[in-house]
Image (cartoon, rainbow, N blue to C red; front, side, top):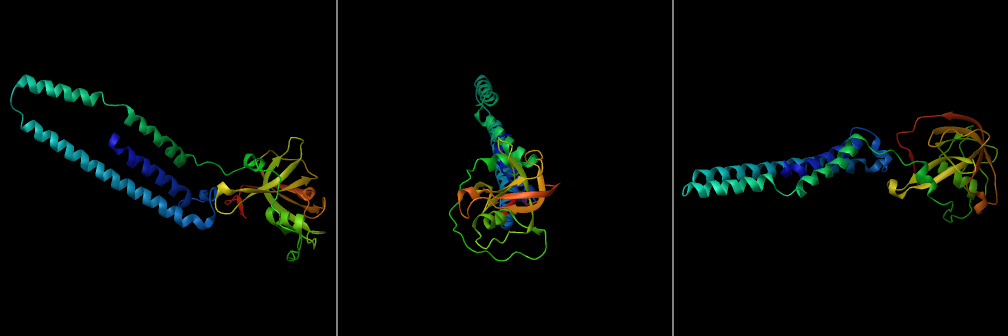
Length: 261
């Protein structure tokens, strides 16, 4: 069975990719939606390659078996010598190197990926990023839609709160959705991770929540409230922005847990 190891490994990885991209929305935990077709093609290609590798391995096994049968048919000469060779041959097969067998353990990560896809990035990933924002410069932003509350992505809320000289958030009721993170002093935030391509390039958008008690860390919530200005525009004191919350509702994690940066 050792000869089929590469085929099994390829098949498991391909099946895992197809599971998260073709048969579910789990791929959104790792990459942007636009990359789905590439994942599907990659997964299908790996499965087809696994079939081809298995076919080659089977062909080699059949050829080897036929070779042994041919050698037995030509058997002649000294019986003792033949018996000795046969014993030596059996010995080499029963006590072959253990290295190739250990390679089967490589299938375990692929099997785990197939059965137990990793969760989306959460509070741990968000807390690794320091609260240092790239210099964007203060400027004006487009007007917000009419009517309150207005649904905003956390990235947009943060940009308007920190850099909008037109103060478009002033007097408006906003609704923000994200997961809960908190500092050691009890301050808590509604947080979202922003990605450009995939989870590997994620950065953090968050808003400090005041007025309601914090749910457990990593709980997904929707909060409704008003912007609470802090510090001068564009200054470190203005980040993270603050929202005075009047209502909080626990929600399910969305299919796409990330915002596009």
